[in-house]
Length: 547
Ligand code: GLU
Image (cartoon, rainbow, N blue to C red):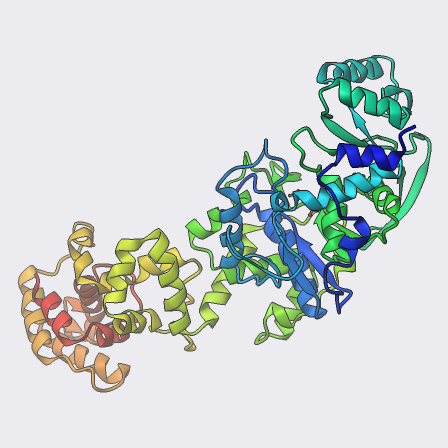
């Protein structure tokens, strides 16, 4: 008579280690706050994924814990080849530093790896074999047609669905019977199933960090543990990976909440302690006044790449996510203006059970405050990094003379009248393009009209005079006084009183507008005096005389 242990040896001939040995293979964790972000490489980084990773990372950081990145690529049907690389690099752009995990698709850091599931095949088999040897799992040969047949029959007869009890062909077979079938099938078995208790009326209560105690129907389904391709299902991989990596808190999306009874059953079957679960509600948006989940198909912003392309600063996006994760952050931020969200103690337990609403206005407001606060040097560096990827032509232009570019960016920043011009990196282009002579041909055709009624001759005469005599050595008032003086010679009143009294035809305001258009090719520009100080002599002269 074949024992279960012998059957397990025959079905998993290459597995020589035991679960016990694996449990002792890795160093003991020195913290009880170990979290992970475990994306599947099936798409770009989803905004919801960024949210989940941020919550875990922030919680780990503020509790001196560990944050792991793990790539879950065992569902090869859904996997996309480039997605893992893209996920890793998208996360790196957010400066979310993982303590352990892949750095790119070839390298990783940490002592609990590999951190990519497709490289962990042998480990899953050790656990699978263990369950088989304990009678807690069994090989199954039920065909797709058979499974469909059962599903339909259960539906029509209103029977509780899935594979359990008598609906499973082999859950009650002896090792000898299973072995016989194994040989009959040419020494192969397509899938390994978990032997659940099969009681459809049983309930369990478990605790979720956000939702408190939850009562649910217990799992009764003999789910698949090892699939036809030899790889584990998510459920087995979750138990194996989170155990061997010493993960203590599972922050994951709400869609997994209903799987908790199954996962607890699996931990129990291995006699392993279960982690603390924490299921995050999905990010939602209002669509015609109805709240719905952010959708890959309908919402471009579901893809984090969208924010990069649009020029949102990564740090602002993270800060915005902090507001989504903890609504008390905004009040705290108002009282602690000079602190960052990294100084804020957020409580995962107080997160909302309902999905937070995505709000572009709030995000842009945060982005504006963020870009206004950082140093001009930092603004230039971040912008350049962005432009190198999304706007190479402009990046090349602006790195030609970094000091000039920084001076142009710096106008009015961090002063009392700072207009906080930049919300996105794309705003930078609009605001400082005119500083670059190379851009003149492109902008020229769009140059605004000069103030009406001023003959070109008058403007030319003024421009020639001014090009020779303008003076930037004093402050803005001295500069303006000088402009008024020169303007007078050409019929521009210095103020309203003069205008009325002496019958001037134009005002100095018209002159300033002319200067603005002639020097910046735009009607709205930053403070003209500051602009001239950046453009400096050669450019000022050339532009003034180009009439
Ligand atoms: N790989 C699973 C997913 O992307 C995640 C699960 C988890 O965090 O446990 O949905």
